[in-house]
Image 1: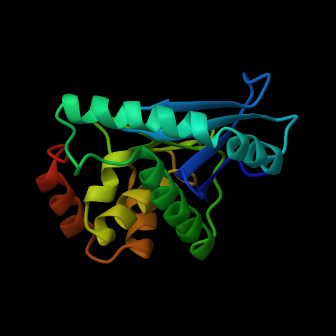
Image 2: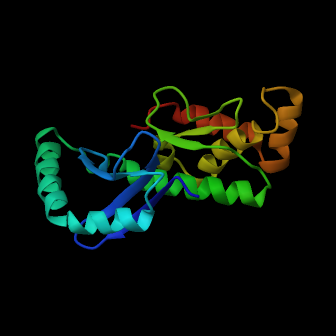
Length: 186
């Protein structure tokens, strides 16, 4: 069962639906620079959550207006990354690359990290930086493949780099380009 999905809701726009172990009921939140998120308990279906959102369209739109005013007041930059779109884009690409190269992973999270483009835990949970969406596609793929390779080799040994070389042409050039971007992508 998928843990999240993004749905275009008429009159609202993109809405992120996420499964939550802590949620006891379906709840909607509207946050600055993030948009609309719906927490869905495991006991509820995504369909039921979507119906709930449709019933709350007026409430959501009132809050979206407040959020837009807040974002304008706080010098909202239209180039600010939309977390919901970034999450959708990066998870879709991760799934595609994992399928193409026969990798498996456990969970995925998209975060606004300050120092890392990505990481892979000992339990094969992959975390990706939402700022990746600002990079060229080939560098996004390089970072994702780097983290997927860690699902097989947990360190940066020769075996790890040999795995990367099977997946990425010009690995050293890609790593250099990525370093040149640094974390200057806001």
